[in-house]
Length: 165
Image (spheres, rainbow, N blue to C red):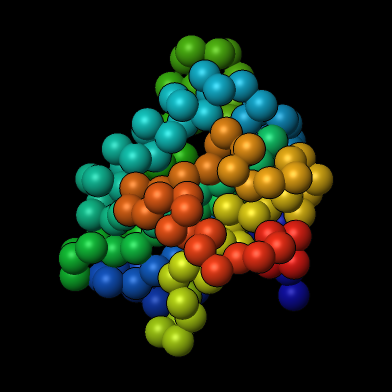
């Protein structure tokens, strides 16, 4: 059952060398990420939180009213729960200070990837969201996607028609 207040998995510690597919929605699903300045400031603070919590940002896509992230713990001490809290606090604080608007809904959605799930398949899925939403015809034309580890071309390699991804 899906609720408006998703909870973390009760039996999972969110520590270590795991990969996570995260989705954060903007406050009242406001279209906050249509402006390059808001995206840049948010990404800067989310990257800061990832570095502090020892996670790598494998893929990101800022849609107009939500953000998709694929992150991976780099050490046994990597803490995804603290990353989520810090990423939303830091980006929310700086966006509020700079633009005078609340950024995030309180809750988000997360999924821990299984060992048999290929990282680049999930990264491609994230990157292709703007095409599926009809925002662009080619994912390469969307300005608010990327990765700390891979080039766009590496993530899209092998994708013939991104609309079906």
